[in-house]
Length: 326
Image 1 (cartoon, rainbow, N blue to C red):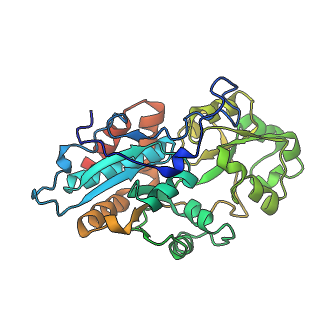
Image 2: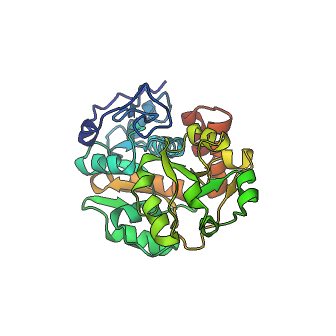
Image 3: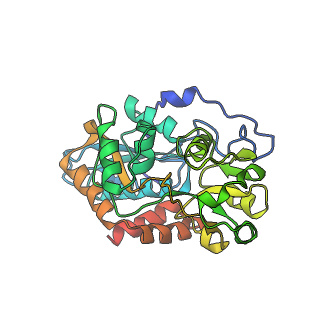
């Protein structure tokens, strides 16, 4: 049980969204797995990061307070819990607002002050801020993102941990169609169903980008919940032929899925990085979050995702174990 008080959050962007189609096909675009505005507060998230250690260790409140948000997929919630645990250990007063939604939604929360901090991915953020981005390396992508950040927001140190979007097929499909890279889908995509989160349909590194960069037009796009087992099940059961799955998802190895190479680098570097309101930054907050970034790697993030997704361990407990071992 989380023991910090719940902060009342007013995510104005969430009010405009509606939860649709609860009784329809769970793979339909209008039946998202999580309802809009369904973000978890620190009471209903069931975690432990925002404990009563959130009171300043000196008792004078100098360490500040931070509301940590997350997007609506397991890895981002895990990272948010890691940030929350590290900040709490540093004496920062912490609360969480998990499972907010996609980038289009939580960016509004950062800008209106409903949340202060969220785990971000450099390439996705840079592309969101500038759809015409052409750079792909970690350093270039970070610089591009920083250049276009809304006023009042800043990025702290990036981590080595990287979780990229990827296009994945079953081993059977790869062997049957001779697929090793995204480029190999040319002349075949028109007969295949592509699955991914709703926003993948319109993002420049999604359906639109695949058409512009690789010349691919799929038979159909099927909307699936980001980072959920629904995507894995749909690919495994043949409801989709190609799926957008995050590269650290343990289901890739567990199901012997094939990640298609990306020779045109449609998916830029995706280093994990704290995106935070400047008003919430102080030396204590910055030091704690930079320490997390220094400790995170792709390997240990993938290992934690196995614990959360495959083994069903509590997200906050996995986060606490990682922070205690830093």
